[in-house]
Picture 1 (cartoon, rainbow, N blue to C red):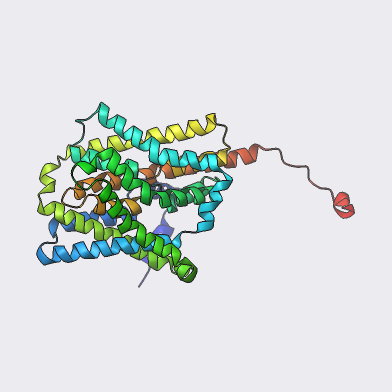
Picture 2: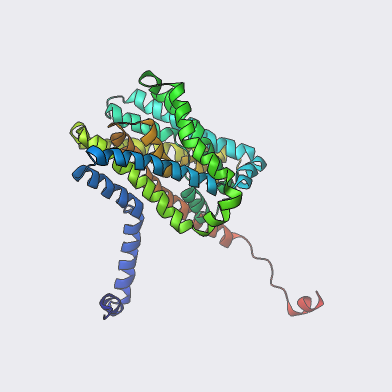
Length: 364
């Protein structure tokens, strides 16, 4: 087959090619990532072809199995050395955890108190659920690396956040969202911890035997991870669609949800940026606090929501984290590049050491 598009590209004037390259780069930065598109496609599939009857029961069982497998793999991937290395910088990591599990919930509760009627009750439930989630691992480390931050500290902080999130998120959901009024309260939290924590602990216990295999098969396990999340989304939205959830969701609510998420994300980014500077952190550690403290994990959020909010309401509860996921990727990619440009500029402004002469080089 003749490669038509490369030939057409080469025939374009240089200026035109540069303009198109810049346009494509901008589009790639602001368009949804591949996984977000897969999530939206799964929601559309559940809307058009929801699981019903025996297939619904099968999907529910498959979703629970996939969630258990997902947390088992999280445990198998967790490096205990990375988690314990945080003892070297306790102040930085305590502040990062404070932003994730204290600052976010306080901001979410404040927004709901000031503007209670802005979103439907179920969407507010989803927003507050986002506030209780742990930080991401992959994107926090990736953005810290791009921004030339303290990557070892980012690995430690993101790992500790994910580990503690398995315990903290169900407890925060019970405290903040008053789930104990419509279900088993502490008993429900205990059940959830057993359902999520046991596979995680088992995976970590088996890490000495399966850790090397897990490391070698990262791409395969990424497919399992994403497949499990998509399965959980399909099962949740199938139940929600069967209960007529889209009739309860006015279209203008999506724009308001984006606004609320923007206020949350922007507020935390501002507080972490200027707070780290006020506390005298280095630029490298500031980057860690900014990126690890402002992220929320979609990979942990969707499986947890499927367990915590069983029933038709989970579909709408999942929307805020799906929107927040894309927004944090878009905004943090811009911030990471800006940090990198500032680091490069600082390097260029530093005085260069005098060149070594040939004589001195020989005598040394």
